[in-house]
Image 1 (tube, rainbow, N blue to C red):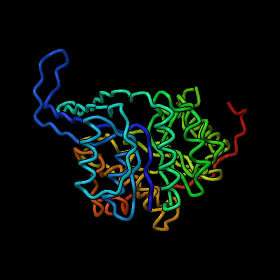
Image 2: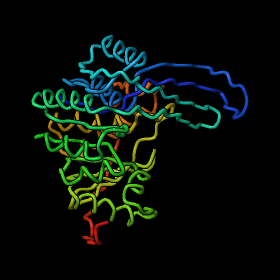
Image 3: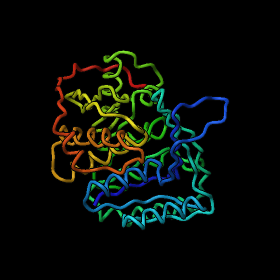
Image 4: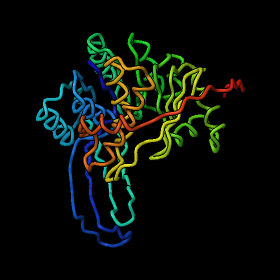
Length: 316
């Protein structure tokens, strides 16, 4: 079983416009409502890829009830920590003419100590049944910045962590199996620009020295770099018609975990994860993957291996 866990799910409204005119009345050609947010996207992706999985998250209010109904209707194993605070609602605006995606994000409500304790209890009960864990999403107000570090220290199985900033830096000494910030997030986390590939590789090696076994850095539809302490891998994602890229990073994490549990070596797991992310971008609703298309895309992805030149700058 793969466990997807996080504190900041969302209920998503997706509006599709032929051409968005800022400052004017716009009428959407399509409108969709669905469960989303990083942790839920991971849960959806794992469900559609197949195999045992479980999703653990905080839910509250009308949006939380709608998410619960959607998971129940699809038969996705889940456990919710119910809170008095409503689950946030976010909006994705797709402009077909300009090919742009605009995300309107409501911040998560503050979390209380009792809710944290309930989440930790549920997590500790789920982990012994799992073979891998994916922790994802920003930390809401009230959660300590050491939250992910403390969870990983309680987890005797590999953990993929999708976080950035202080939450990522604090978690690295607990030695997560894989972290996956995008290039902008890694730049913000390290507190410096990453303009060249050399800048990027230096930052990635630093993250590995701080504790991560693997780090993946994506940059939209451009090349994806992955490295461990010895080698770097350069992948070129497949070119697919993009409808909605939201959730592609979550599908990347889910695809990697799915392939790892299936026994594939990490470079192949990354290839499968990239294919899952590409498949996601070709659909309107996030993380509702077609596993046959994911496998087909994965078979067409190549990667290059490079031995990294050892770089030992002072750790920031």
